[in-house]
Image (cartoon, rainbow, N blue to C red; front, side):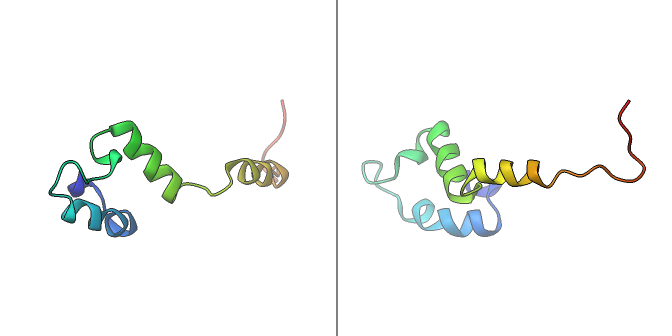
Length: 69
């Protein structure tokens, strides 16, 4: 898993990846892909996806060269 992480994601997960030699003490996400994805999304995903979507909808604009058929 470590080789696929880059930048901030690698820095954020590095401590757990390098220090977890005891299987009983390592985080749940290290043994469960779904937990890893949840941790990744909660850490690096949008903080408020509903508000982000509302803002995107509120700022939709049609460009000069576009038309509705």
